[in-house]
Length: 153
Image (cartoon, rainbow, N blue to C red; front, top):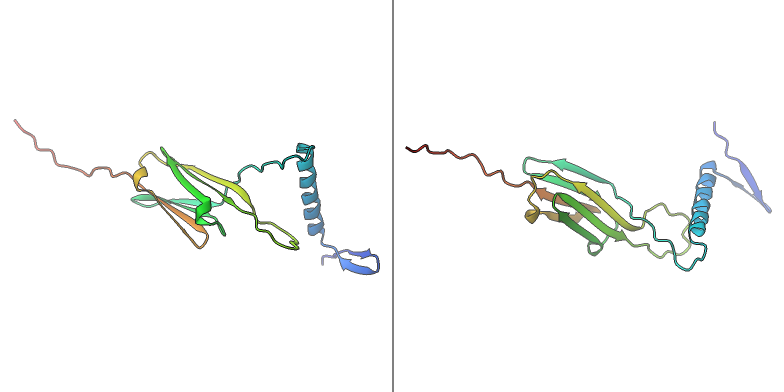
């Protein structure tokens, strides 16, 4: 049996979750570290880009990349192919909410990079966003099928 301590606040008693206490300390420590990194408070410290979750799979004729981007607008996503590198960048904008009690969703700039094998056709890459999942199809270059060579004199 797990006991949750009870704390007295003036005339009220309430339960305290140890896990919630640790999360609150972690949040306060993060704010403190941001203040130490920029003691002038003149400009907020830019958060580094984070990487969204993604899966890469292969079929006989293409590579399929699925990137989880729930709640992201199509206009806030950029997909590029540089040689054999696939780069998905964008931003999840923070929504203004009154009386927000807790936030665990990531916001800000994100970047996903993947190096694919050399047998891709960058001119036929397609990207579709549906149900919060970006699906990028990178076709393989055609190998130019087998051909019978006639032997001449």
